[in-house]
Image (tube, rainbow, N blue to C red; front, side):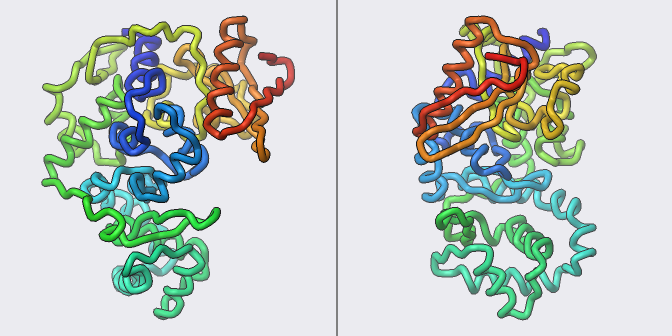
Length: 365
């Protein structure tokens, strides 16, 4: 198995090179979790993996609560399925809280404060209410809890998410809201710890494989011991292959039948294809790092050609148009240029907008 084989298999298993599901909630459940601090980008991450999806349809799924957004790993926002949110938090919350411990101390947040803040949030949100951040600041203030400091408020809210008290509500205009988890996701499952570790590992290696144990540790935020235990419980369902001293695990040895050599994908910020691994050498040549502009890196709006990072792209969204500006590491041939145009048009269709492609510098498409 070569790096190119690994890249193509990941495109296949991550549902970038194939569409298996028509509902974004099914895509989220397949992937386990989808990094989502860039909300617009995360919607496109689901859109490029979901048959017939549009920005509007994914926004509606979020509003309906069929996908939730919460702090669950590393710590940053992720989309998760309502059925999975509780058992995932049971595994990951202790690690995220440990990572946040310095900030809790610095912001004078302790168990007594969190008990009071959780109670205030429950009181404010119970009965199906969905409140914005300013409204929750007011509710905390009324309970005698200082929350005007943005960083302090953010950590109070994150801790409540990690405690399984609150999660995302529907957006109100452009503002995010929060709701009580028990009201928003009554179907949330709980799993026995070993069962949860096994399910977490199975989801990751099935959807993100070929991947290593170290990749799973990075993605999940679990300890090495817990990640290894989860993997050990599902190795009978996976295939192992050793490549250059690394052990990769994945769910099938069948590479996609589709020829991916001239396929191009415009990935959003923090897409699982790049962010989901600690070792990104299969999809990115470190020698190309100098070709990014001052703000770019392998996690930011990358162009993927033949499974490998081949440049970056920017977009300017107006009322009915989206202007896409690629910055490629090397010029494209005619077939690749057509593939780029098709990918750009897919993004335009997702936004229900016409597409204008603007070349940048001496890297034409």
